[in-house]
Length: 161
Image 1: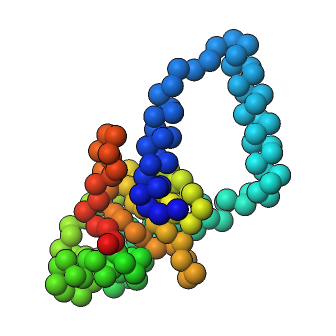
Image 2: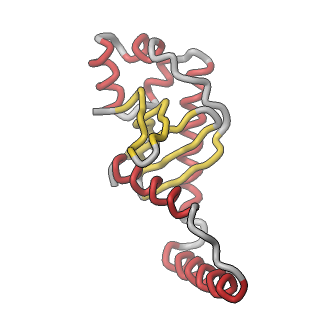
């Protein structure tokens, strides 16, 4: 699943949260169906299977944000996905470190929400939204300084080509 598909999935999730909530017996039926679905998913996926991926994505995002806070742009660049790093260097006509410094990315704060879809992740931090992909050597930031645009995909100031 690519970042565009991830954005669509996130948009669908936001739309579904606005749906009217069932009441009374209908609510009991919904809860029973949801519990059965969760139990089936746990049996098929294995108990706690997503936890390592969630933690991995969260730790990568936190490491990226800490590197930016420490002005350690070499470390922050190492946490970028290869295409994101390449696009940044091409757009800014300079190596990643100085190019990343020039982006003036916001201090994102703590991670409020982590969603993982296969090898893609969406992380909402207090002041930013990040998109990550899982590579053979770990999670890497694909896009940062992202803002939702209503029914449109997120607009990100730092992203890969």
